[in-house]
Amino acid sequence: MATIDTAIIIAYLIAMILVGLYASRKQNNVEDYFVASGKIGTLSIACLWMASWVGGAAIVGSASKAYEVGISASWYTIAMAIGCLLFGLFFAVRVKQLGNQHSLLTYPELMELRYDGRTRIVATITTVAAFIAYAAGQLAAAAAILHTLLGWDFGTALLIASAIIIVYTATGGFLAITYTDWVQFTLLFIGVVIVGIPVAISQGGTWAALNRELPETFFDPGGWGWGTILALIVSITLSFFTAMDSYTRTFAARNAATAKRGTLLAVILLIPLAIGASWLGMTSAMLFPGLEDSSDVLSNFVLSTFPVGLKGLVLVGILAALMSTADICILTASANLSKDVYQRYVNPDIGPNNLFRLSIGLSVVIGIVAAVMAWRMQDVIDILLVGFTVNSAALFLPSIAAVYFAKANKRAAFWSIALSLTTVVGWYLLGQTAAGAPYDFDPVWPGLAVSFSVFTVLNLTDKPAS
View 1 (cartoon, rainbow, N blue to C red):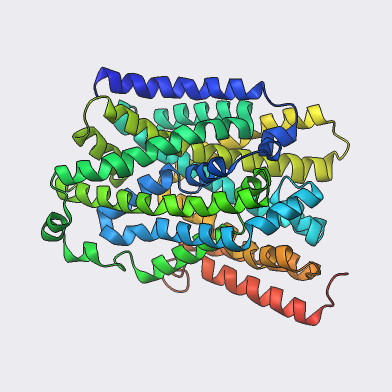
View 2: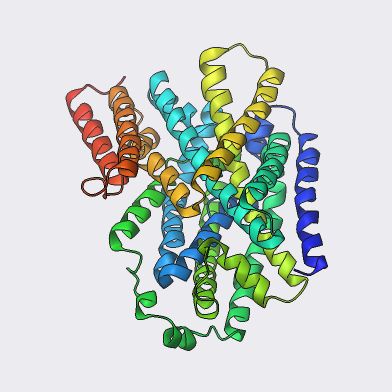
């Protein structure tokens, strides 16, 4: 990179810390820290969805997978569009109304409202585990980008990226995330769609050239493997209804209409990003075959084809989106531990100031744990799929019932979550050590089967909770 491109990236990393420090001066309590006191507008809600769910890991991961399998990689972001659309149409308004009526800040609070305290516990455990995995995926992707851009080894890049994200998230909270997401999403959209696709075409990556130069399998929608694709779609789509940041983002909206409009606007913005990421990945497969590490595809493409100056801005956009997704994941898990564990079960009488300080400290701890997970796994998509599977399989049915059925069965909710979570984690761990059937099936399927069976049977055999 030219000096100006490197300077842009370094300046951005410093700016993130300054934003966190600035936002920290505007926070007085945990409501400010976790949901910005419920004052976020439509466009900001859309940017929060995009920068979180459709952040850098989705773009970097989709481009890398497109480099390997072609257009089939777009299923990753298509699944996100489906989940975001369904949540916006059927959940956003109702969740915001419940949040206002009961002053909710977290998803497990909603679960206790509809069920009981023990359901809140297992929902908290599931949510924390999933969001540590989500954060780890973003940190791994950010480290891969810095490794390519600045030549640092992966460990050093991961350490620096994690430290910066942890500092500005812990100090700035939800306000810092909101402030940065506008710029982050704008840079990402411009870089991948408005600039990236034309640059790819100018480098010979026309649709005709791609068809001529790449294997036929690259144009097979099922090239990733239909079993993997179906599990991916189910896990990601259902996760929109079970991931705590979906609820946090909705609680933070100015009103119910804002929550719905912002969510649906994010769906519209997502489609061109899915096309752009896949196009850049496939063009890279044509221009740079045989790369040792496919996680470097997007950054390699930008470094090799973009002009000086613009190169740095686009890479900052990709890096920014990665960091923006990691920060909301860290903040979400911190809210779970401080509100849903410590205040609820350990020290119900904790004062507002002490709870606020505890939340900041827990953000640091969660960030460190996520960084360790990123170091051990490193593969972005694999890490994210662990999180999606844990969340979606265990929590989907109880979440639907919590929002739409006021008298849902308490025992059914608790045991379906607990047993499904145990099944998913056990299946995944066994799959790491045992080859072949039945562990070649994705853990989402046995997890959903257990959840559906237990929830249905107990609802039929037990009287509904009064």
